[in-house]
Image (cartoon, rainbow, N blue to C red):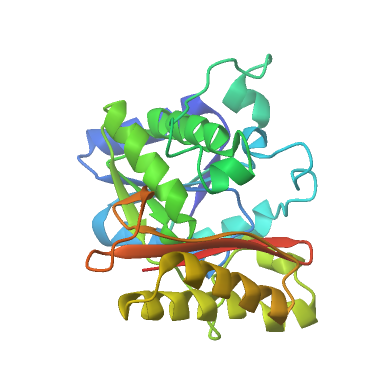
Length: 280
C-alpha cells in the first residue's frame, strides 16, 4: 500500500482505529524530518515487529532555544515522504504547529526532573521539556503498540522511557542502535551543516569516544579520560566541547563503574553543527 499523509489528529486516530479493528499491530517512528538512513532504519526495524508503521514529521518549536536553528532546520517533506514510501512506511503524520499545540500554543508541559536537567538538559535549558511534551502528545495521539527511537540520542531515549513508565502510557519504547557513516560519524540531519573540511574532521568524535570506552575498561580514570578526550577534539578542530562523560548505561545520572555496562556521551561544536554521540 502506498504511503498516505494526514495532518490532523482526528485523521491519524481514524486510520489507527481502522487498523486496530483489523487486529493489526501499530508502530510509531517520531522524527523532525530531513530523513536519512538512520531514520529509515527505525522504520525498517518497526516493520519487523509491526503490521503498520506511522512516521511523524514535526519540527517542534518547543525544543529549540532562543539562539538555536529552528528557522533554518532543514524541511524536506516531499523528499522525506518518498523515502518513507520506498521502505514500506504506511502513514505519515505531518501536523502544523497549530494542530499540535492549538491557537494559544498550549500551556501544559511534561518535565522529567533530574534526568532531563543534566548534560543536554543543562546545555540546552528547556530542551527536554519540549521533547517530553511533544513525544507524550504523539504517543497519546497515535496510541501505538511500539515506538522506535535511535540510540544516537541516548539521553533522549532514557528520558522518554522514564516518562512513559511514570505516566503509564501503554506503549513499548524500543531503542535502535546508532546508524553510522562508513567512517563512523553518526548519521544526523544536522550533518548537512558541515563544510567539506569539517566533514573530514567530524569522525574524530566517534573514534575518541570509542577510545575512551576502551581505556576506561582497562582501568583508566573517568575524569582524566574526559579531559584527554576534550583536548583530542579541540586539537582536531572542534571549537567547543560541551561535555564528555562516562555514565552507567542504565541510569546516565550516575557515574560509570568499570565492571558494569557504561555509556560514554559527548556533545561538541564543529563549525555551525553541534554534534552529539555516544558509545557503549
